[in-house]
Image (cartoon, rainbow, N blue to C red):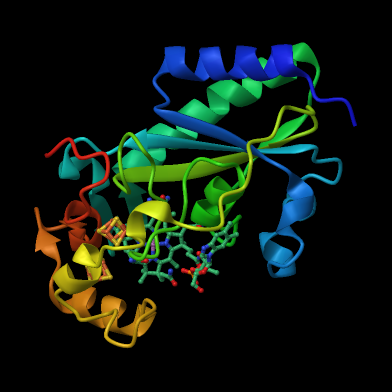
Length: 219
Ligand code: B12
Ligand code: SF4
Ligand code: SF4
């Protein structure tokens, strides 16, 4: 398959211009081992590239969740911003003649894994994508497209984590007590320790992100 380097450059430049902080391109064939509902071809049969974009949460307020049980409305600020960026990239690709699709948040694709497959950074001991520039303090979204763009090189190992355990030691839920991340411990802790902002809005624990020294621009 021929990969369009010029178009890759164009998508990168355009994304930067509209406000996207990080972008990567992954080979859809690398998603084979994920459950079927988390594979790119389910969303767009002729997918040639998975595009992953991210924004830096330079202030934690950007990570706020808002949910109104009475109206059923819910809203995640950073995710809404990302969705708008995805929409703009989608329009650009469509104008050039490539069908594309914005992947919904759930089931969707496994975003941090997709980002590691696109070479945007490794998955750290904190179980999250770590980027050089922003550490793990990024939120992600994905688009699948029929455009054949130039892929990044997948990253399977985390060099900076080799002699470090800061994030694991900082977790207030002790979610790394057995070594790898324990989702239930994290979830239980969060359900009783929201950072409440208002009647409807709250922020999740972020300690495994904030404690990591990589790419720190302190909030
Ligand atoms: C379900 C979910 C949760 C659940 C369960 C978490 C879990 N990991 O199981 C709960 C609600 C507890 C949660 C908590 C958090 N989440 Co969450 N969550 C998700 C969601 C929707 C799916 C995660 C998932 O199932 N991934 C797939 C499974 C297979 O991965 P896993 O088991 O976690 O990890 C394995 C792989 O990464 C693999 N692996 C390791 N190295 C490599 C390398 C390669 C190349 C590959 C392919 C795989 C691989 O090994 C790991 C261990 O088995 C994603 C959004 C999405 N659509 O992807 C966000 C997401 C992962 N969450 C995110 C965040 C920020 C958080 C929190 C910090 C809370 C917050 N402030 O929002 C915590 C952090 C917890 C932690 N340390 O992992 C971000 C992560 C951003 C980043 N920098 O990576 C995501 C991507 C959302 C987003 N839009 O950006 N989350
Ligand atoms: S705090 Fe250390 S071990 Fe944890 S993700 Fe960052 S570099 Fe890796
Ligand atoms: S989000 Fe908080 S509770 Fe969950 S793993 Fe990270 S530090 Fe631990």
